[in-house]
Amino acid sequence: MQNMTIGDTARQAGVRPSTIRYYESIGLLPVPYKVNGQRRYDPAILQTLGVIQLAQHAGFTISEIETLFNDFSVDTPASARWQALATTKLTEIEALIKRANAMKHLLEALLDCRCQKLEDCVGPQETVS
Image 1 (cartoon, rainbow, N blue to C red):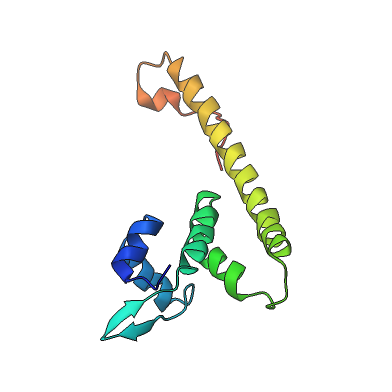
Image 2: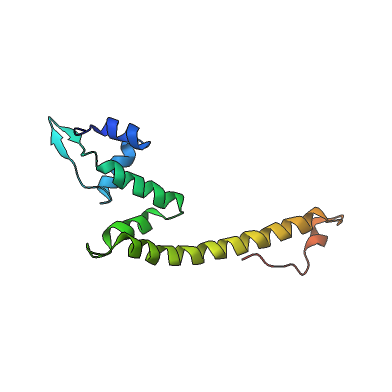
């Protein structure tokens, strides 16, 4: 496969060209070479974009994805990189689930509210933090 334009790359990766330019600007993607002023991408860029999308689907922020790509030594295996980031992310997700469950229980309790005035609803409540 020959080198691709930004439009071709974006279509094949399922992202907008502006997304690719943004990733270049923050260092997630290398700056491509240009032919007559047009960006040209090696097809391998699709794999990198796939990893970025995988990380986003797993809930990683752009900052965390930058860490995945840039904050490890070049000889650090992918598995070690994922493990380092996933350990922290799982802790965050578990806290989020705990908070969501507390919110759900509070909302379920509010479904049973029989108060006549809103002011009567304020009493000792389970806090959602």
